[in-house]
Image 1 (spheres, rainbow, N blue to C red):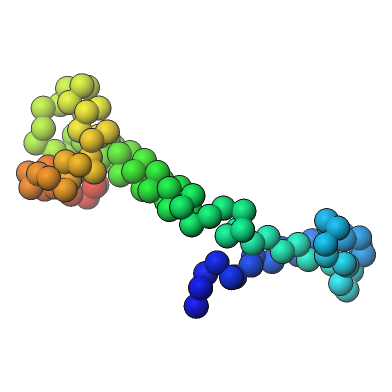
Image 2 (spheres, helix red, strand yellow; image 1 turned 90 degrees about the vertical axis):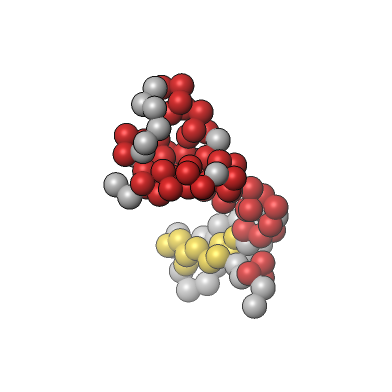
Length: 104
């Protein structure tokens, strides 16, 4: 099933008035169909998911940094938090410390 064809339907109780020009009122409620895929392409959705994932990983590592074996300086914490995706892929020691940071 293709997700791009699934609209999200919102129902508003607006007493017989319709929301927008395209949708007529139905049973006292108006239906407003918003197809997110027509407003945002798959590329934008992937970009948002990646940005949120990056930020979440950086925040979790930042929050659990004290559980790692790295030097506890601010510059070290900042650098290792911001570069976490590349370091996670490339460095086994960093992966182990990243997992320690996320356990808390």
